[in-house]
Image (cartoon, rainbow, N blue to C red; front, top):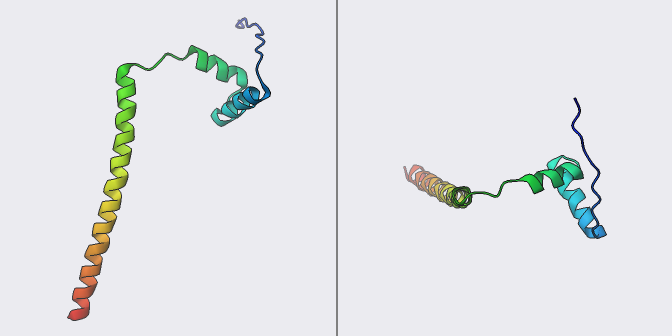
Amino acid sequence: MSVKSERITLLGTPDFKAFLASEAKSEGVSISELVRSRCQAVPPTDDEVALRELIVLAKEATTRATKSLDKGISDAESVLAELRAVH
């Protein structure tokens, strides 16, 4: 059993069409599928929005922590090298 579908004509500028094509390509779908998925998407809940914000903050904190740890390791290696050179 096939799903019935109907053709929908949408008018837009060449730039808008190029935008749709670019978005569809980056998601690996057709323009039709892109429009369907975007139009049928359920808006995120407040909790989902908050979670996304927390994820961004966690990634930023992880980046800062990694840089700090790398600097600490580098400083420790420098001190060890100085101590070895003295002895």
